[in-house]
Length: 460
Image (spheres, rainbow, N blue to C red):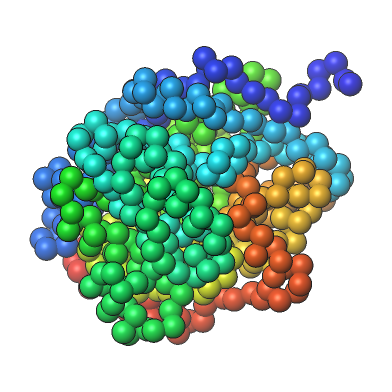
C-alpha cells in the first residue's frame, strides 16, 4: 500500500456528526421566489401553511437568514444509529475506466430504508411528536421516502398513511411489505379512497399514477383527520436543510485528506439529495471560495430542469398545494411508467431551480438503458447494486471520468450514491431480459403538462 494512499472508505467519528443543519438559502444573494397562496397570489405566511405542515417545519421553510440551524439532541441520537455514512474512493471503478480522474461517492444506502430519505424523515416525525400530533400522511414514489417515514413513525409511535404511486407499488411489492411491517397503511395511488383519486381514475382509468396524484390524496386525508399533518420527502426548503448533513459530512471527510472536488454530481427528482450533497460546497461557491461545477442529472422521461418551464405551479395534480416557482413540466404531467422511480416528479425544488436558473448548476437528462448499463458496471466494480435514481448520477460521473482520459486531466469527481437497489430487482430483471425500453416525452406530452400551468401575472 502506498504510504499516502487515500483509504477506500473515509469515515468520520460518531462525535463528528454535524450538530447543525446548513441553510443554503441564507447564502443566496437572490433568494428563491416565495410560495404563493393560490387564492390571492400573495406570498404564503406562517398562517397560510399552518393547516398543512408542522409548526417547526414551517419556521424552517420560511427561514432565509440563519445560515445554521441547530439539530435537536433527540434527532442526533437517532442519527447515530446509522450515521456518519461512508465516503468511498471508487478505486475499482477508476481502474476499470482507466481514467486519471479520482472518483468519490457518498453512500447513503446503509440503513433499512436503503436511502438518504431517513435524514429528513426522522426530523419531521420528531417535530410532529413534539407538537402533539398523533398521525401523519405522505406520498411515496419509488418507496424510499415511505420506507424511511414508516421507520421514523414506528420509532416515535405515530400512525402513518402512505399513498404510493400505483406503478411503483406494482413494480416494488417488497417496498410495500417493509412499510407495512413498520406499521404504515399503504394505498396505491390514485385510489378510490379520496375524492381527487376517484376523479383521476374517472378521467384516466389505466393511469400508473404520479407523485402529483399521490400528494393530492395524502393532503386530502390529512385535512380530514384531527391531530394529523402532511409531510413531504423532497422539494421543500426544509427537506434540503435536513439533507445538508450529507454534504457536511462529505466535506469534513474530504477536508481530512485535503481533497477539493472539481465536479459534484447528484441525481435530481425533487432535489432533496442533490441539495443536501452540494449544500456546504455551494455555500462556499456563493461566497466566492471555490469554482466547483455542479451537475444535476434527471431522467429523460421526466426532464423538469432540461425541458421544463420556470414558473409558478402547483406541487400536486389536485392543485391543493401553495404555488411554487420552480422548473416544472406542469402539475398535470404524467410521466411514463419506467424505472426512474423517485425521479418521476413534475417539478423541482425552488432552491435547486433558482440555482440552476442563475447558472450555478448545470443539468443533463439521460435515458434509462444507458443508466442501467452504467449501474451494472458499477455493481461489478464497486460491489454495490445502486438504486436506479442513484445510477443517473453514476452515469454522468463515468462520462466525466472518460473525458479526463481524453484531456489527461486528473479531476476529482464526487457524486451522491443516494441508495441501494435491492428493492429494484424487477427493474434489473427487465434490463437483463432486454425487455426494458427508453421513453422520451413528445412535444405533445410536454405541452399537455404545460397547459396546466396557471396564467398568472407572476408567470408573465
